[in-house]
Image 1 (cartoon, rainbow, N blue to C red):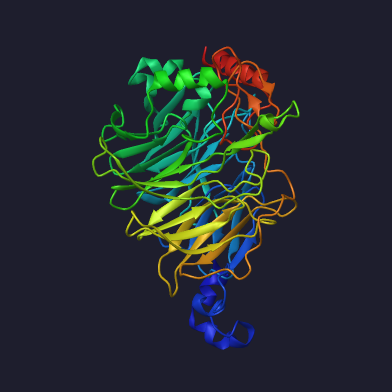
Image 2 (tube, rainbow, N blue to C red):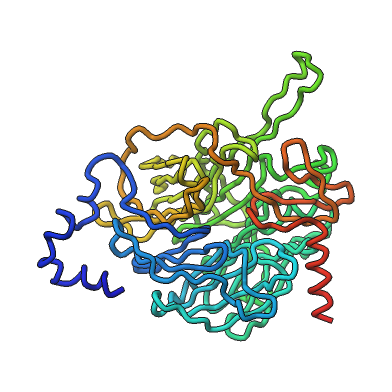
Length: 494
């Protein structure tokens, strides 16, 4: 970061002729609300920021990257590590959708993958020393026999999602030794969950604050665990958790689920107090009816994009819903259309920083969570499909947040930086029909795959879900590939 060090020293005064007239972020864009800057990083998915707000860490599908954002109008790529573990017999590590800094050790980065089953590919947890973000160093790799879509890291422990077609579990792993300390599943609480199709109860994401872990369990709701003893997690509460028998019956009745609301608990996070919980729900619409030409059978859309619910979880056994932040409207809310449903976000300093795919990024004042107030938003649907939004530095004067976009069409993945102040985008582009379909492959969790009329892999009639939404591209080649994945892992264990 020598160039940035130079910009922050007294040498800046001698270089004023070469720099913008004003060096502070607030002076860069005194007019309509817009990004400070961006840097292209192909394959971008999740992003997190360092505690000092100077560095962003990205999952890039085929690797991971570090970006210097200390000068927010000129973000600069520091390191772009592609194909980590290329020397492994089953390497490299691929399908990397998530990275996390250890919440108590910002010099340790955890990189996980693949996000979905990739037959024959290595899977596991890569531990990286990012003391020097420009020169990350591999510390350890802990191989797993299951894909890892998302994770969290805290106190030297990794909290991992395990969805391998047989098990939907939270795995807690020691980052030093690689030892699995525990696995927790819904069936530990009630065996009736085994009757719910796998894809409707996937553990999609995990968030940890203090001694509590929050699991986004898709149509099975959000579960709150006490993880003060990581070897023995215990359920202490939940949000919008349905009766498993009723959920199993509803699946059997309509033959499919998972893309339509309600349910679809995709991502969760709390504020600093741990009492305000935000639950992002990811959903789409499905076209039904039509076919015989009669007016009564005219097709219509059922469902649509979902938003972010705010809950008071000061008593996790009796949560109270406070409000909902609605998603931007979509001209085509189907799975193959224009996505504007909720994705990843952060609660910090009384603000909610949220991403909505091509619906853009938003900032809300949630200091009164019963009445959230939108402060700013920005979208550019022809070039940006936002995966996450994360605060870097708070404050209207010099604060900013980052938004990670996976790109649209021939526009690559990017990391954007945005002002942390209120404002309105001038002439926000309409959410016109897509340049390229948003549809991505789904994680396969069954034994057969049938393609539905809307292009989504349908659930089979053998009691398993052939797919589960929310898992993104590169899920798997198909059910036969997943079977090969499991067989290979089983043989290796034996």
